[in-house]
Image (cartoon, rainbow, N blue to C red):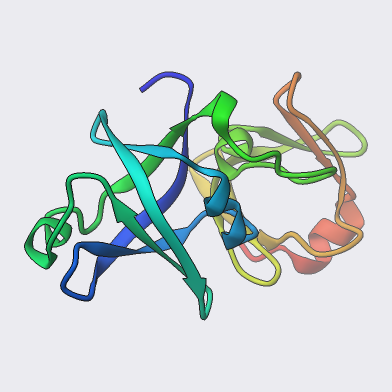
Length: 166
C-alpha cells in the first residue's frame, strides 16, 4: 500500500484473549501507545490495547478476540499511514526511508545501495554493489550525512574500511 509505513511484525499470539506479540520496528516501543489503528493485509484494525515490556509490544486489536484469531496473524506486518507515524526525532529515521538509498564516500565514490538494515545496538547495514554484499555497523563516526531528498547517505571512507565486512 502506497504511503504506508511498516512499524512491526506480529510474532505470535499472547494469551487466550486475542492479544498478539509484536516485534517493533520503532526505536522506542512506547511509540505504539500513540497509534490508534493499524493495517494488516490492507485491512484496518483498531488498536484496543497496548502493553510493553521486556523489549516487546503486546497489542489487542479490534476483531481479534481469541487465540485462534490471533494465530492467523502470525508473521504479518503492521502498517500505518505515514502521516500518522510517530516522529522518529532529530537525526533518526525509519528503516523504510533508508532502504534503497545510495551510499557514497565523502569523496563521492559510490559504495553501494542500501538493501537491508538489521536492528541491534549498532544497526547492521547491508549494501550491494556489482552483485557483492558489504555489511557494516552504523557506529559512531561513520555516517557523515543522510539526505532523504536526494536518497543519499555519505560515510567517511576510512572509518567505513575499518568496520566493513565483505
